[in-house]
Amino acid sequence: MFTFENPVQGNFGWRGGTIFIPEIFVLVISLGVYTATFIAEAVRSGILAVDKGQREAAAALGLKPGFILARIIMPQAMRVIIPPSINQYLNLTKNSSLAMAIGFPDLVAVFAGTTLNQVGQAIEIMLMTMFTYLALSTIVSLFLNWYNSRVKLVER
Image (cartoon, rainbow, N blue to C red; front, side, top):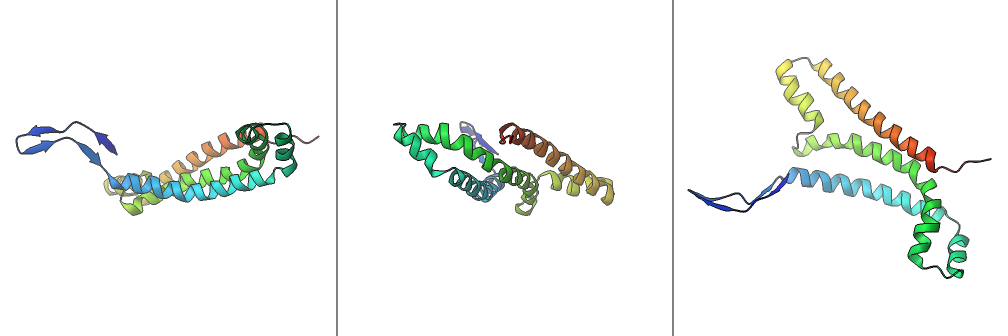
């Protein structure tokens, strides 16, 4: 959480200002860097999968490098990039449960911590947590598989 307010002079010092919760920043940065490395490798392999002649032919026509990448290379590379990216986005969804290790109250901490302490039924709470992650993974997987079916190469 990151909040910006104008500091106001109170009775015993200043009130307001910036509220900074470091756990969320650690979570976003660590999961972002971890997932970005795998997605960057998928993008690199997708770009390298496009034949070198495609780039050379576009350059011979006088197209600019940015246009070549955006209009010729990337549409072909997306067919190679999307399948491994689906796995990485699913991993990102599931790896978010590691937020509890740094002290950020995520879904697992709420279910397994707070609710379990109040209810006391461990098996039901863990099943509820499991089905919640299953639902999240299924929704992400269905959407990304739909997108993959839209861009994949149709063979005749």
